[in-house]
Length: 341
Ligand code: ATP
Ligand code: MG
Ligand code: FE
Image (cartoon, rainbow, N blue to C red; front, top):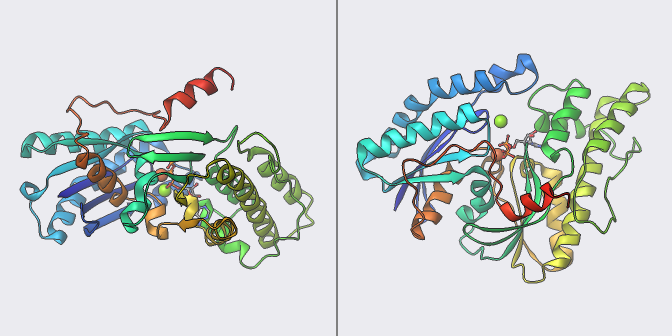
C-alpha cells in the first residue's frame, strides 16, 4: 500500500509518501519559523495562510520526487486535529478534494496518534502494548498504547506541556523562537547544577506532571542577575528531565505488561531527554525506542504511517470527517479530568 500524508496542524507544512512496508518514498517539511519569529510564537492566522501557499506545490513536488501519480496512491491521510483549526482545515480540505477527484479513501488522522505510532514506522519489532511518553508543544502525557486507536491515558500535565516550558524558558532567557532547540544548544555551555530549581511532582504518588512552577522559578532565578544564560538553560533542562524520568519510572512500574518504553513528540528530539530515558529503560530491563529526531518534531511521514496502520484495519473515514481543534487520544480520561479528577 502507498499512502499520501498531509500535516498542517501547527507551524509545519508537511507532505509524505509512505508505504505499508515502512519505506518512505518521498517527503518534505516546510517550517514557518521565520514567519512567526518576529512575534515570539505561532500566530494562527499567519500559519493558516502559509499552509495555503505551501501545501499544493509541496504535494506536487513530493509526488514528482517519489515518481508516482496520485492514481498510484491507495489512500490519503491528513491531520484532522488537534491543533490550530485554520491550519487543520487547510490540510483536511485539500485531502478531501484530492480524495474526491482521484476516488481515494480518506484517513482523518489524529495528530497525536501520528506521534504515538511514529516509532513503529522505524521499528518493525515494536509491539503493543507499550508505554508512551508523549512530549510535545501542546502535550505531556503518559499513555498505555494497547493497539491502533486504543490509548489509555495514565498521566497528563496539570498546567503547561513540557515543550511549552522549553519555549517559555527560551523566551525568558532571550534565546528566541523556537525555544526547545535553543535551550538545548545554550545548555551545552552551561552547568546543570549551577542554579537550584524545583522538580515539581517528583516523588508524588499522583501520576501527573506540572511545569508551570519550574518555569516561574527560572524567571525568578534569572531576575536575580546572579546566573549566566547557559547555566540557567542547563539547570532548567536538567530539572525538566528529572521530572520526566521520575513520572515515567512510576508509570513503568504500574505497567509490567509494557513491551517497551517509547518516547515521541518534539521534545523527544532532545539529546539529554533521550539519554535519560534510555538509562531509565535499561535500569528496568525494558526495551527503549525513540524515533530519529526528524520524526519526533512535526512531519507528514508519521501521519501517512498512522494512516497506513488504520487502513490495514479498515478504519477509513467519510468525506464529512470534521476538523477537530480538540481531540484527546483517550476521551474517557478527558471526561474524568473535566469532573475534577
Ligand atoms: P502537539 O504535538 O502537542 O500538537 P506541536 O505539534 O506544536 O504540539 P511538536 O512539533 O510535536 O509540537 O513539538 C514542538 C515542541 O517541541 C516545541 O515546544 C519545541 O520547543 C519542542 N522541541 C523541539 N526540539 C526540542 C529540543 N531539541 N529540546 C527540547 N524541546 C524541543
Ligand atoms: Mg513547529
Ligand atoms: Fe506535534
